[in-house]
Amino acid sequence: MRITNVRRGRIYRMGTACAILILLIYALHKWSNENILNNTNEVLLPESEVGYYKFHRDVYPTLKSDLGNFEPRDIKIVSGPGEEGKPYHMSPDRANDISESESEYGMNIAASNDIAMNRSIPDTRLDECKYWHYPEDLPKTSVIIVFHNEGFTVLMRTVHTVIDRSPPNMLHEVVLVDDFSDKENLKGNLDNYIKRFKGKVRLIRNANREGLIRTRSRGAQEATGDVIVFLDAHCEVNVNWLPPLLAPIYRDYRIMTVPVIDGIDHRTFEYRPVYQHGINYRGIFEWGMLYKENEVPDREANRHKHKSEPYKSPTHAGGLFAINRKYFLEIGAYDPGLLVWGGENFELSFKIWQCGGSIEWVPCSRVGHVYRAFMPYSFGNLAKNRKGSLITINYKRVIETWFDEEHKEYFYTREPMARFLDMGDISEQVALKEKLQCKSFGWYMENVAYDVYDKFPKLPKNVHWGMVKNKATGVCLDTMGKAAPAYIGMSDTFLYF
Image 1: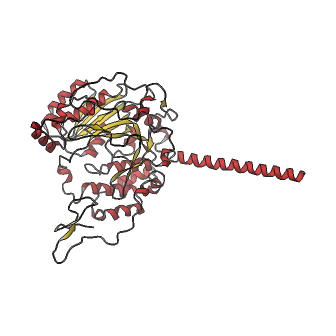
Image 2: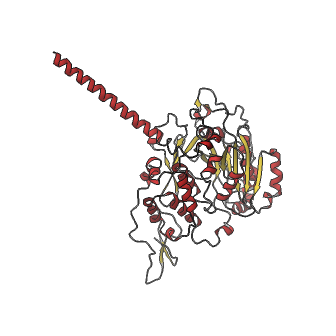
Image 3: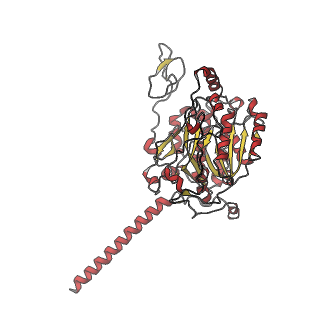
């Protein structure tokens, strides 16, 4: 009997110990998954320099039953062209106006001119977003808008919506940065128009054409808010867009936040969601460095109780985001060697993630964006004496700075000609990477961008690469400018496969 009791006691103790061990392993695994993205490189700054950043690590927005503290209480219903974000169809007798404005601006500025600067648009958020309450002392914000030969009314509608739909105590200023525009209505007319904002809007002009990337960096240098928000010059911000963007940065200055982008039709200015309602997406990329989006994977979605909560994303489209100003400058802003535009979204994303920060998309912040029919202007002298695609040159700078050797090869498999392009000197960027004690690209792929492999597996090396030419006729296979899937043709163009 005593032996039996001893055995039972021993078995009981062993069972209890095993159960405790299993619980500990589970808790450790769960803690690891939830914290691996948060506990990255903690030491970005010397201890003496951390003072100018405010931490509120335990301060989160709260979801309540009553309307959120920054939600508008009295929304007026207005009638007129384009109101409520509805499409505005111009009369047939104005076909020439439409054609001319689309040719000049890549969008129907004639329609924009008929639509109110402060028109109403539909609230495209999840209904749950209306009930979030945010800290009252969110940081002062500078909204930076870079433009070059933008349509006047589209540019000013961007400014009006920012001012009208942002809490006055948070919106410190709107900084317009003119990248050497030559249109007359963007000179004295613009100077006079912004006087109505009584100092809330500042205008800075470049003495020469610098391109989007360098001009944004100048805007960040000139801004005086604690947080900077970059917007394209053809946007309309939606209801209560700003507090949700600022709340994660308020908690941790190393978080960059991205609003969910809605679409504005370039011809009718109809405002409509781009994404299926209730489904969250995040930014990824393929190995040729084309930006893509993917539904948020379960590994990330399971970290959140509500679909309206901000969630982690490996990268972003590049045009619209918020970031602590001093942090942005501390990590080097944009690489000054990047030309005009293209690739800056990846450069900033890799730098933030690998060097101790993170990126979150914010479902409760919605911003409409006009997608042009085409790019209506050239790069001018910025492209002078450059061989090859400027965007591909930018991509090469980014991957040579931030990728490891294995992942660089995937890029060159997709873009073999890039090996021969002159990307300039990247020694300063590599030195910055070492100074910030950044993690490897392998770490980034394993812990942040793990879902890239699901859509775009690792690439084998090219077996052959070159042009396919018929010796008898002298013509080559040619895609004829069409994207796959499509039939290919024959031409005398030198096309590499």
